Image 1 (tube, helix red, strand yellow):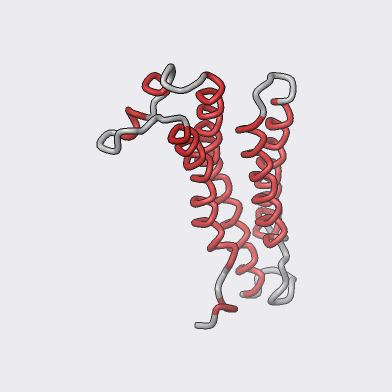
Image 2 (cartoon, rainbow, N blue to C red):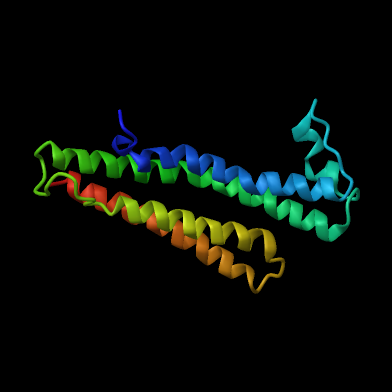
Length: 165
């Protein structure tokens, strides 16, 4: 099978999973840079807020928590992303097999654009989550979350329209 036969939107699912871990890796690097060493025998306990607080400067602790929360939110968004990808692939395949009116090979759900937009918005979201520490500007991060969720919801809606024909 040639590489051109790969379904890149489907491969974007594990890519998003790996992408989702980046804030966690950043959080760990923040702690390491400030002298905190987690215990790998019990990493979740040694990385809990109660274990870390007071062992690094407060500004570092706050950024660490925001990075961990960004990673957690990435994982919370994973099922929505997967649903949007799979619904779109199913919708596109149904038209190829003759159920819809679209010619084979067209990106009828805009899946390619969705994947690129999702990663762009989630990148901005993650950077904003980690870097923004004040209440007023934090609403930018919330807006990015809403935009990403809206993109996924709209992608599922487009697939549902095709499958409803």
